[in-house]
Image 1 (cartoon, rainbow, N blue to C red):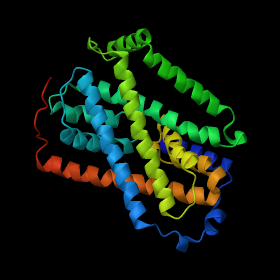
Image 2 (cartoon, helix red, strand yellow):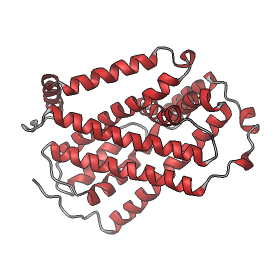
Image 3 (cartoon, rainbow, N blue to C red):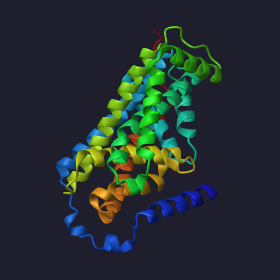
Image 4 (cartoon, rainbow, N blue to C red):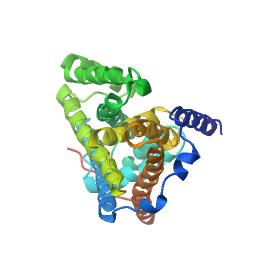
Length: 305
């Protein structure tokens, strides 16, 4: 209850900063908010494909870390089912669930966990780089110096990954923390490849949100609107008490969209975006879960290279 109260308080503060109140929603003509079904379906398909791509990237990181080779058709159900843990308070349930599910496919839990944590960190870095568009196009009074600070941090992180000695030092530290031996073939080129793929993944995610926005007939510039989705995700993820970033993500999305679309439209889109992402994620995850339970949790054991 304390976590939920804190989340609600912070969300209220963030939304209050942009002056959102119910009168803004009352001014909206909801009769005009009829989506173009083709564009709406396209946005959902793009979002789902990005989620599947995220699962494939996790499987690739597992393999590069010396773990078992997991076919994409097995990685996707595992990853989507584990994502159900994101809707619980804290950030550990998704990763713990993924480790437990992956062990039935011949993946050591510590490798699955390491790949998940490493992949999530790279995903946050990629989302931050995409989210720079929202920070750098926002009015200075709303974000202050944070745009330049975020850009500098992203550049520093990429530099540390690109330089072999710093990458090796970071890799040694990471594998010491997770109490396993670092694969001898792991090099900075792996880190750069992973980051590039996660960035591509976030390009698709951001574009899917922009397509969602224009499906409702909203005239929206692609860079500030698409990047706002990534920036809001990062803010929601970093606020640990909020399950799946609920409340915080919506509040920050309103903050980033308001200068470009107005506070009422931004608020409506924040609510729509939450419903959209939840439905697109939970429906296939639930179907995968039902199939997993029906099969008794059994599956083919992944092959080792």
